[in-house]
Structure formats: C-alpha cells, structure tokens
Length: 120
Image 1: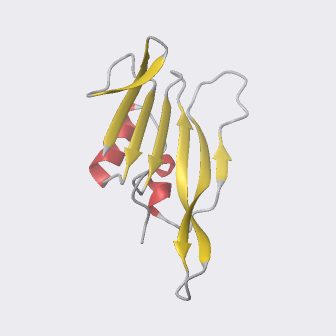
Image 2: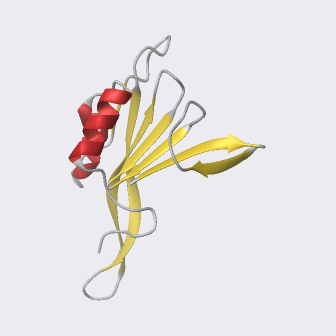
C-alpha cells in the first residue's frame, strides 16, 4: 500500500496520487511489483526497499556522508512493538523500517507492517 503526503497551508496532508509536490511517500507491506517500480522511479538500490521484508535485518545506514546529495541515503531502523509473552508478560519485539532520503529531497519510508496493525 502506498501513501503520499505533502504540505498544504503548513499542514501535512495525504494525497491520492504522487506528483511533484509529494514530499513523503510511505510504503506498507510492499510487493515485488511496488519494489521494482519504486526502485526504477527513484533510482534506488533494491535492498533499500526490500530489506524490510526480513524481520531479522540489522540496522544500518548508507550514503549519509555525502558532501552533496547525489544519490539516495538510507537509515534502516528497528521499530519496537509490544507483545505479550506466552506467560502473559509484556515484551517488545522489533521490525525494520527504512527511511530513505532522495536527492530531490523526498522522504520515503518503508515498512513490512501497517503502522496500526502490528504482527501477531
């Protein structure tokens, strides 16, 4: 699922489709077609998008030390979510979240899970 956001009158608003005003693109549960399309459209390495499909992926960064932004930069983070252990205790698990900054100053976030529906 793709979500597009931009600013309007100092408010972040959701758009129906992407255009030149789109500042933030959020991708949830990407399929292979979406990954391929976004890789080509924004000239991104495929693993910037597909890394979130592996729940065991390690946090890392790539391309952050550029003097001038010529290629996309990646921050792969671990996002926590709360679960209950089989014995009923509170525990936390993590899953990967890609934060990509493009040379056009767009932000792309990618997660294998919905922001509101964490894995069971």
